[in-house]
Image 1: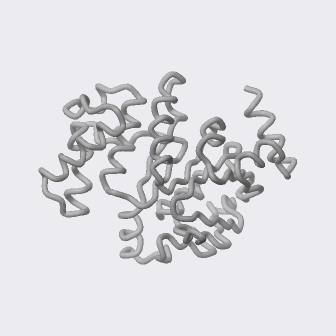
Image 2: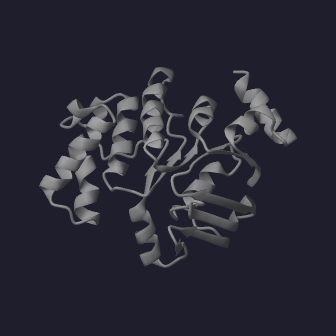
Length: 247
């Protein structure tokens, strides 16, 4: 039986003043699917992923997430954000709160969870991202890789149906990248629906069901990783891959 779409974008366009950041973008992500989005800087990747939970408002087209149309209705936005975890390039942790408090705040406030249950869940996910011993530290006491793993755990504590990652390793030192990608690979293996904006092509080959190449606000190409890397159809995709894979 075919998997049901959990994310659909149809003809989605977005402008910043006179600049069109997204040009009639179509995207379908099925439940449990892993989609990796790549492309040059300024291609619209981050804008697209930020539109999926209304961090950016689109001007044209329709976005449906988990059966709900994402429009200006604040109730729809809140309902969708409750089901969609987001991990950013910068970790966006509260520096004045301990790691444990960073993780328990959302479940207690948004889900009405008791402090004891929220802490139990937080400890579970800190162990899950392999830093159980960091619970009582503050973000500033952690490495970048550890902070990003805290950010992933914080999203998981909300028990999301979908995880969005916006270049989660681009602010990290090279030796820290693999520790974050390893956690993401495990998440993917457990069946989490994921949309990942990244330049990490090894991760795309290993994890993605579909790799999407964007350029100038358009989806230029979408294909399974074997076909995408071995036989890209578009000259723009080939040029991009030649540059990024030669480094």
